[in-house]
Image (cartoon, rainbow, N blue to C red; front, side, top):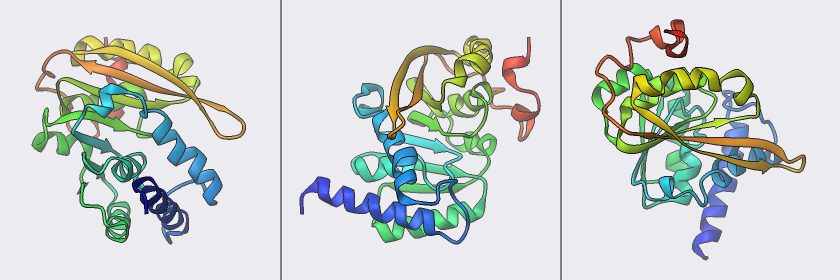
Length: 225
């Protein structure tokens, strides 16, 4: 079996486990929708992106059922993936998936983002999250985890530019990051527009970020003057 065939087999097995798991891990309840909206969305966004391809150690915060971290781990066995979620039922599900898929490059953590940053500060080359929080909140969670000159990415839909980008602009200097690239792509038969927003870390994150547990969501950084 070719390497690509082996990866495809693992992806199909993963989708089947994900949509049929007794605890709801995704809004997509059939394999076709899950493949388009979860798998393709995870892969198309990074397949030609050097900032990701050149990274060795990657963290997926609020990973849920493993999107995108577990998908990436299947496709890139040479990289290390740290999947973090604060809900223990989701981490337990991921333990089962990883065992069934025989993945050896995935590390799981059941922690809040604010606590995880205390032990993994500036430890990663690349950090991401999908549907975790508004962009300014997500950037406060992710930026402290990445090394200087590392990258942070957010998965967004078209509404990002109308509803969220203004908050993103307000946190760039505070977190020592810069806008790097906006990758536009389409998924599914209906060609839904998606955006992979990339930021580069240009300096050390101030020690007061992330703030204490619960504060980033309660008092979003993008709204603080």
